Length: 327
Ligand code: ADP
Ligand code: MG
Image (cartoon, rainbow, N blue to C red; front, side, top):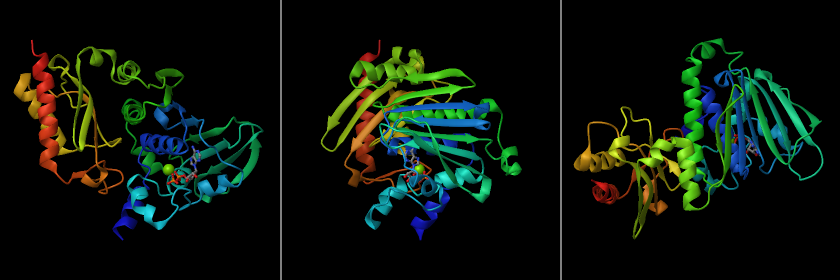
């Protein structure tokens, strides 16, 4: 039952950024290595996500839009893992019920593709031929056009766009191997090439977090049995008045965790902290059995089995790195 609740809880489409998040996850699930996001009016007029993933056939399209239809749960054993990652066969159906949604796709390298359109709750799906290279384009227009109460709940375009941008940044920092482009009202916001080696990864982080961040960071890399951390921590010259540049990934998943935040803050404070917020992009990798991510599919929380070890490891690693660069 808890699992069922978790699954249901994830179904909410709260704002344009939640749509973008779901569509990006689908594109990544489909194995895309190039994803283009185009939005207008901070996403309430248009969200278009185009990928070069596996694509869908004419038979796949109505299924993709049906509730509880997922192609991703092979066995019941997978269900737990799948639920924590947000795979639940609800996203497209939920989004389609509050927008005008067009799916255009092609699962083959040649030939034409197919497209399907739905509008609001009636979910009449008509599949037609359409030109599309291998991959999928999902177009979401007029989000909440039929739910005025939710539409009214949207904030200013500036705020909604900031949420969309944050989703894209988080995903872009989690998948260096994928090219991302974000355009808003015709303007290119991010254009990120795939990054494999160190220099390229640094360039991607600069692209996402701004060049000033990379110029004022110390690179982190340390491994002990069972734990490894790498990434970048901003020098105190780059500390922030807000906690808005803090990205922490555990086994590739972004998380927010008090223990982690505490370890970083403490390392900062000990070295040269000025009462401002540290900025960081950090990747912790560890034995999946040592971390419980099955808390809530949308909250990005974790529970470490050996919390104190993780804390000490992070604290000592960052403390040393920051002390080494102290003038
Ligand atoms: P879930 O991702 O939980 O399976 P969704 O509602 O997000 O549920 O998507 C439903 C189904 O539509 C997916 O299982 C997948 O088969 C298909 N699908 C959605 N987006 C894409 C995409 N970009 N490329 C290929 N298939 C997709
Ligand atoms: Mg999905």
